Amino acid sequence: MTVPDPVIELRSVAKAYPVAGGSFTALRPTDLAVSAGEFVTVVGRSGSGKTTLLNLLAGIDPPSGGSVSVAGRRVDRLTGSALASWRGRSIGLVFQFFQLLPTLTVAENVMLPMDFCGTGRPRERRARAMALLDRVGIADQAAKLPAALSGGQQQRAAVARALANDAPVLLADEPTGNLDYATSERVLELFAGLAAEGRTVVMVTHERDVARHATRRIRLLDGAVVADSATPAQAAASAGSAGATGTAAAR
Ligand code: ADP
Ligand code: MG
Picture 1 (cartoon, protein in one colour):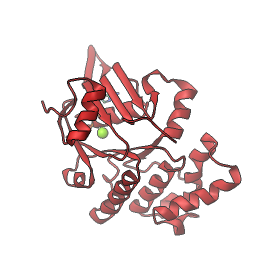
Picture 2 (tube, protein in one colour):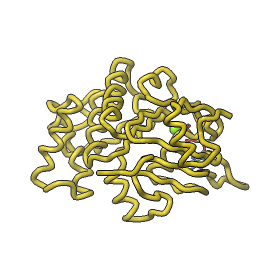
Picture 3 (cartoon, protein in one colour):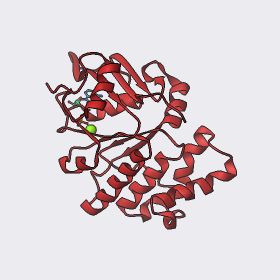
Picture 4 (cartoon, helix red, strand yellow):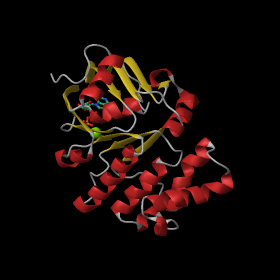
């Protein structure tokens, strides 16, 4: 899939949730641009808006204001089946608790997004799933149910599933939160490798130490970007596309 650059572009994106007696601002107006090949980590303490930001990028939640462009589409303008189909083709999602379907084998879990999006011919999907499982190092686990795998193996399966439709963007929400240190390292190396081959990876984490695998680190505090390690080139892309306020300036 060819996608324009920047792959991710937020302009004045904000998110407020309705709460009893008013609304709660989870994300303040934010500009952000991310290019292909970047491995961005988003850190910040619990409640700082990390998952909110990721859900806006995936079109899981609509913004309260501003525009969200990801992989060439205005995500904030997509709804229903168009949104689901765009997400299936463009976004690979990885979660803290893996979210594999327990009654399907590992290979079947990886084939599911292909079935949903009609990727490849049906009879080629199993071979494609096997190639992806081989890629993440667990081809020998393909016929098992997820519960028979270790946490690290399940997360590898989830990464293989996220790659099923060759999505240009991978979004991960605390993917190492349930893994031991050594296993986390291997999953993070996997993400770094996927970014190095040109995918765009945005990973939310509350663990500061895992951020060193990234090419760029963003910090959220109370729904605002308070630090962005963007290189001059990254910052210029953000400033050029998202307006003069940019995102590099820490508040
Ligand atoms: P993080 O992922 O950084 O822990 P979240 O993005 O999940 O933070 O949440 C940011 C803030 O928004 C928190 O204060 C949270 O309670 C609030 N929030 C998240 N989702 C909702 C919701 N659906 N309704 C009301 N408040 C919410
Ligand atoms: Mg969260």
